[in-house]
Length: 350
Ligand code: PHE
Image (cartoon, rainbow, N blue to C red; front, side, top):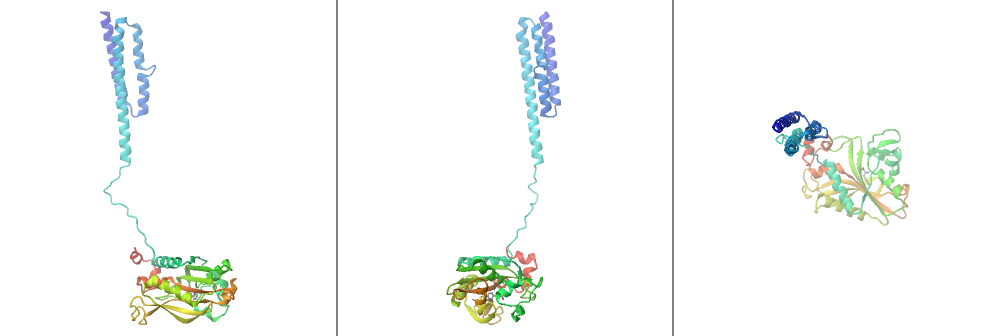
């Protein structure tokens, strides 16, 4: 009888603790709190162990019964804890997903695609033609000294040839280079007396000019070849190769006598018109020929002044307008359009 009363009382206590535990667990807000509750319930001095202490007071035949009762409570509490823990992990997952949510139906941010500038395109193509026949690329300063721009190029101070190139002076001695030719002298000084010397020099040049075919800033490629026994035939061969690679297999070139202080003899070089094939059209002004560059055999003064012995070696040089080639190649009729940064023009080169 007294066993029954005891059992009823104990059952009630265990049930109460179960309810209590369920409530505590349900009230936790995150897994740290849940950890604390776990200790309060199942820890060494937790509620369950407190209940188990009653064991000592029980009659021997009640002990297994009570043990089982407590075990069931432990299982139940453990299950509730695990379920709550699972709930927290789930909730955390959901909130990261929510935070990282992207709307796939939103229109994307298109990245604007650039394109090569027509001058860069022409320059790149011209460079690769000369690289292909053994020339190396060197570059030099756009702010140049009077010495390299003129004097080393056999154009003394006050020489009338200076009028061919209307110059932006920065000081009496410094200027914006009017051509890439000063790099002839700089390169020879650097490498003399080595031969062969075979370089091209692409870069910006400046003259006080502005109309449909001239801009104050423009681009040139200088060519320089120094070796023993170089002849005009070598120059012609190199330029013919260039003309055909750039403007088509059927092109011919023609050399006309000309004058530059730094070459002797000097020539102006024309290519047969790639538009009409030489019969005459608007592009070649009915002549069948288009002028593309100046060239000649390097003047002995220039060789000597830059460290080479003109009795031992000689060479040829040429100066090509990159923008002119770009204009011809891409059919532009106003050079200035290349430098106004009008994206409508640039976009046509995608
Ligand atoms: N520097 C000359 C010019 O700009 C071109 C040129 C270069 C001519 C090399 C002959 C030799 O007009």
